[in-house]
Image (cartoon, rainbow over all chains, first blue to last red; front, side, top):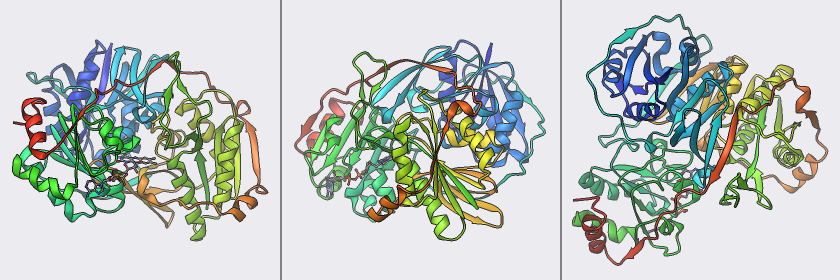
Length: 308
Length: 250
Ligand SMILES: Cc1cc2nc3c(=O)[nH]c(=O)nc-3n(C[C@H](O)[C@H](O)[C@H](O)COP(=O)(O)OP(=O)(O)OC[C@H]3O[C@@H](n4cnc5c(N)ncnc54)[C@H](O)[C@@H]3O)c2cc1C
């Protein structure tokens, strides 16, 4: 038996989610093959070959797979799917876009955002914004799964295995890439950072996020936000943490001017240590915080930067 | 252009779900239910397309027991022209829902299907993509902007790294993200008018879709509780605790 992991990559770089998905896949007790599908992704395949536990890497490099559009990528995956008991990808926006399409084309249900592997058929996944954890058992011979990367450690490294280059006849006549607006940041990625500091509506505007930057610099932190802060235009959408944004589980999460709505908690409550700074002592965020500081953020953020 | 908007009845987003004592599922008895927030955004977008003269007809569809007619009436009050209820008491997976919707797409031939990116109960984020696959249509998921012109839907998508824009040949499937629009509220006169708009009921088992479960729900449990924390009095105390007690900074 073997399982297929779809590599997550961007701009020719393998993303750290892949090693976490490989770790989840290693719990299935099978050989792990990684599929690298994209355009100009040879270096991604080389990086994937060095993830511990991977036994083979399949590389399909084709301009029809550029930007990993769902239509062509799903068509490719189903041509390679035969013989794999499980097909897994990260529950990133890329994985979420492609995998249900793969599942439907294979006439399979999908199990979304698993956070644990009980056995080869049985998985745990959060539902209702993480207010309940479901254990689900697949009754199908082939399983299509997305993995919540924050719930798994990254697999380690190994001496590289061979990369097998495949040619595929995929084409995409129904959709095309128009453009991308990428948020440039020198900071670590939200989902990979050991420390995250997030601002909410209490920040009042985008400029005030600079109050978080000095602290983030000192802690090597990524900066996140609540939906309210994104909706108000303070910061870009890719900074949203929550049920419908990014799921993070850093060693330290600092919530500043965030009330702690269910949907926000869903994205950060598995952090190891949570700090909340809020002027309202009744704010629900304090119910999940290890350390709460009831204060005006405009007073304490400069002090915090100084004290670090 | 005909637009089909599938919607789902779910727990109200303000309500915290509770797990049943026997761990068989979440307890929804006497819980406030509402239209899934992402579906509201889909309805709003479809109505705006109609108001802009791009769409000619907006059809709302919901799959479930009788109670989901309440959400269909809401969609009608918001401006949908007609509603279809695919009636079933079965517990459905996203694939079943997508297959039932695919049958409706066959019958109605909408040029655009617009639906929520995920429902806030199962949090699956699958149905739109599956429907697109089954109907061989391109998909624009997690949309924060949709423009229809020259037989294409140009969709801006919220992705992990920022925003991606794709062009889809119509007919297509679009799933909505939070920032696509801000849904309106239904006015009282429109709520009254909605009572007279057509709502057709189709029995799910007449559509020839195998609804047998493929995934079994074994158990539902509460998530691990966090230990109660403490309130610190000052920044100095906070930094001290983070260094010496939590040991997460140095
Ligand atoms: C379908 C759906 C999905 C959603 N998904 C998400 C999601 O993924 N992520 C998410 O975050 N939200 C999400 N939400 C929104 C969520 O319900 C809340 O509305 C949102 O999280 C609130 O953001 P906030 O805490 O920044 O704002 P508010 O709730 O307005 O809280 C602001 C807080 O700042 C504090 N404050 C104000 N001024 C100061 C000051 N000077 N000093 C200190 N504290 C101050 C206030 O006391 C208050 O507690 C979703 C909602 C829906 C319906």
